[in-house]
Image (cartoon, rainbow, N blue to C red):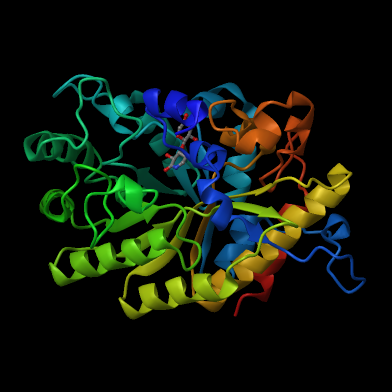
Length: 385
Ligand code: XIL
């Protein structure tokens, strides 16, 4: 295991970037054919007058982003942008175990409630992320937690939002499938070491006993194609369905990594979407952002065009499969998680700060101006059937 990955693992992070650093997600890197062709949309010039929220609503869909309570309170223009563009938001960290139950049985909701109040004021849905995850957990909590710990946590946190008019859905469990066959001791479902399918089943059952009025999702990354991980994720979804638990949706995080050097598994992604729809477990895009990796284009304009093309292509596939909720992991490059050294993908960026300006995964730039990616997302909503 690379020293980088050991560092990140020690820090409790088995993140997208750690996997990227080990090259694990290489096979998830997707390729677009960026040979310039005249008839490809030029998103830079599109003049979009409606907000993404309005364009989504016109097709009975929702668009939103992960947001942070501290920026919401500190940056007025950030708050205005969210209110204008989003019909759903996900707290970036405010509903994770370390934020809501820092000590056993002691619950805190100030930062999450600040987001809930903002949602109430602006008629925005709130997506609860997440009740169960191997990261974002307080030091006192083992992984996996005992069923007793899970029960106390779910009762405390879901109970707090049971009567909420804005919180409509939960990532009941997040990233429970291992990164690869070496990281699991469960051949059937590929669960992270120590996890048993029955524990996840019981987690969903406890959640339903506390508040079955919300939508329940199982959320993961690296399942945007025909992969070992997506195969096992689908098996776990099937197991939950067959166990009779309430599971309404599958969160496809969609932290995508495109480049001229990798192939996008369009066929595989379509089959994941189709199999979820067949299982009557709605595919939800929960954490979409798009990184372009080496070989990098020679200008920001070209990079932005590549990002825009990738958004359009990905969302066209999603909407063809009747996806009705798209959440990007952030709205503006100013606050993207992927610019944080802990999460920065791959060797390309981490060791080359002069390349960080190429990390532009979101619809709005650092100054909250719409980018070609914004126009591409707008067009995808406009063209959705
Ligand atoms: C990330 C946040 O964006 C960071 O600010 C935080 O430091 C770590 O977690 N998949 C998930 C999200 O489900 O919760 C992660 O969010 C990104 C990867």
